[in-house]
Length: 305
Length: 57
Ligand SMILES: Nc1ncnc2c1ncn2[C@@H]1O[C@H](COP(=O)(O)OP(=O)(O)OP(=O)(O)O)[C@@H](O)[C@H]1O
Ligand SMILES: [Mg+2]
Ligand SMILES: [Zn+2]
Image: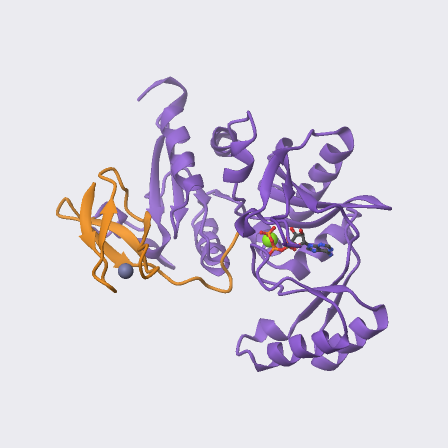
């Protein structure tokens, strides 16, 4: 084992392997840590500990001492609920996990996230919550159009809809009421922010904003998500940007986070959400900072803390 | 490159030799997604999970 490592081991738990997880593994190994990728779909927990980890390609049953995932876990599941509940299991076994359960819970749910931002006085768009079809339509009609509808769980801009008029609002509500998922009937409506055709994605690692990029919407798109073909360009980290990012990170409980910010024409920076398992390939492609290495170094700081 | 057949449409798919477990291979013909797995040192494909409502960052 090379210097710096002290035999510290780190597991990167994934369910769908992306560039980010391979990059984290690569940097952890290069820094001399004992690192491995663990498929979340192979994990089994019990009240006695981690029962079995078939990722080792053996069917050996581990002693339920909770050490088989090492000193720390970076939880990177693409499925919010899978990642969330694995984090709950890991924390109850005393294995430090990035991010913590409460952070994952807040960030994975837009309603909880907006409440946390507001509670901590982080500038955020005005957002309304309704718990019946009737009230959802009332709110939209009362506030006027356009208004932005979002599912409270979900990402990559999927089903985020700029609602143009009453008719469109009624169709969305009708559709949501037909869906079997109970979360479909929790309504999240946000003021339509007048912004340039871009937003800002900043990555916070611990107490530092490691990088920020502008995300420009793809041709003919309103949403700026990289997953929808949006393009990343470097964004200077002003004092104002740094300050709002660190406050947003603190509001959700801190860790490794992707802060999404819009530039309102009148009010300046508004944080619209904080992401828990941040994708950073787009940001890495235009940034000189080694984001994966920053994350691994932070994980090691958490172990030593 | 290792050649493996698409379980849906039988097209020949190229999987890089250094592909690791969990990596995704998409069939260019039918769009099916597969997860790479290794068994007995050989690369095999298993159907990947389809996109969930709760997927994302
Ligand atoms: N209130 C708003 N006003 C104007 N544009 C908005 C508003 N809310 C969202 N957008 C645009 O839609 C995009 C997707 O919205 P949001 O980030 O809330 O959804 P998401 O599915 O959680 O995406 P992400 O992958 O960033 O987590 C944003 O990046 C932004 O470009
Ligand atoms: Mg999000
Ligand atoms: Zn095919």
